[in-house]
Image (cartoon, rainbow, N blue to C red; front, top):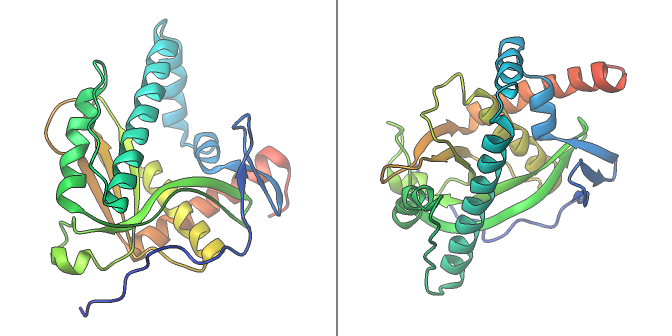
Length: 245
């Protein structure tokens, strides 16, 4: 596989989306759109919805959910600031937190060993299927476990990355919606910027350990998960908003 010229930034967008101040959706040229994560939650399979409903009945559910949001926000901030410093050639920051520090210590080796070049991070995008969202990071990274790629070859493929945290291990069934989320962003990036990510990494930091759990998607797999999401989005707007198919 020959080396290719890497993007240094995204081209000018055809139009932009903007997250609403109350975080209930996104303003776009198509009007106000629901977020990718909201649509995923509303279209989850019945078994998953039932498990969530049962879990929400726990007396400590609200506290646990709030803690998960706080640690996710904290870790995202750490990763974003580290990448900004790396891209600028500035001293790399260190972050400490009594409750969440383990997640950063788990994530940091991935960045130090495999992050190559930033293209964009935390950008809002939308799609004519009437969904919008903000992707975490579009960059080049040498990480791969694929048999058909060397690390050098992998580092020349535009990669969409999403940062997550989890106290417990996740199996393929539990990360299915995360993959659909990445696929949705892939379609939206292609629509807004005319650039299609060539692969994706779902990177999940854990409170213990020295390396995150990572799921890798090829470009074809990423696009196919986006197709799955688009079908769910269409169904969502039919059932929730009475749109025609």
